[in-house]
Image 1 (cartoon, helix red, strand yellow):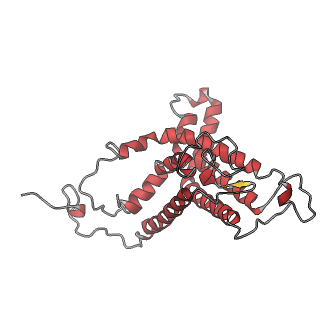
Image 2 (cartoon, one colour; image 1 turned 135 degrees about the horizontal axis):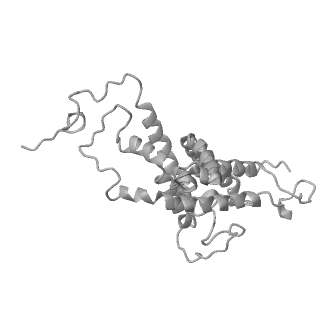
Image 3 (cartoon, one colour; image 1 turned 120 degrees about the horizontal axis):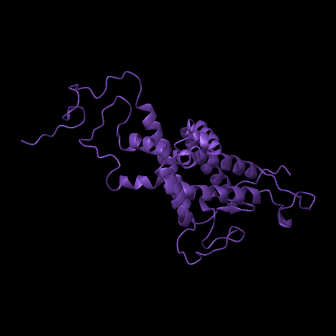
Length: 273
């Protein structure tokens, strides 16, 4: 007779009928992750498919950078090799930062617990009858994370370049009240983009794959002092990898939304000089 036991009553588990003996509010963390992460996915999906309101001189949304498709004037600093692309330009490049985050070791833990309940928390039984880990399709694709890390470094360099461009002098039509352009531009958007790119780099460089790239496969650290120093630095950053993951997620959304408000004329950029 086939068994229908699952979860805490599945074969091999301790004979405890309760789902967990924990008395704390263990469900708050996976619930918060589910709500926040779902909200970001909805927001990012809408913005990615909009295909407009992503550029407000001199700011380019990180969702559309680099803008390689049929982009608005001023948004393409690397040309438009995919001008024939019929959909939103964001869909050309978002696969790389998205793939990096979705295969990230920290994010795996976060969404495995919040969305798949595998397990929902430490000491809480999962409702699944079997577990194959990341050895089968589609989860075996998580092993490409290191290659997405290389792509994330390139994206980080492009976003850094965008920040540099955000400091460039403004055209005459965007001049300050005296009718003259300043030698350098500094606005609230510039600062937001700067903070965002710093958080992006902290998240990227604190990655477990980065730690392996700079210090992996070494038998004797003493023979590689430079790589050992880099490995030590990355290891320190790695202790806060989850924090940088969430901070950079919020900063990307904030920068994109701010540029959206500027592009649609809902607000004016706060200019410092």
